[in-house]
Image (cartoon, rainbow, N blue to C red; front, side, top):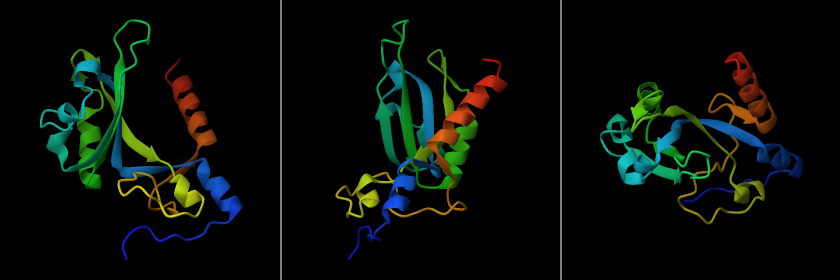
Length: 160
């Protein structure tokens, strides 16, 4: 039988993993996508991310118009088949000017599947979340707290 094998987690393990985010070397997180480019078709086109390798999944979040100046910018999680493709995509699109906006691209962070955390079989065959505990050498596990601290420290380092 295929599917995800369910290994029951102890409650304290599940509680710890719930707040963990694992760096996925095949996942690219892009922000600052202008409204006119925030569609799966455009993002996976050869002009943008399609040229770096096979894309297995894209999840776009639509731009929010209430960002003050009416020009919303969207974000996307783009899952590539290989780490090389993701690495190349980040190298070539971070800081890229698209329709007057600069993209910011970085490795995406994934969380653990809520079914997995409850020791239940996941019902979604296309689930992008994790179904096994990743050790640190496979992906970097980061707790939400340290993630927030890092972001804060980054802002301070950039002077605001």
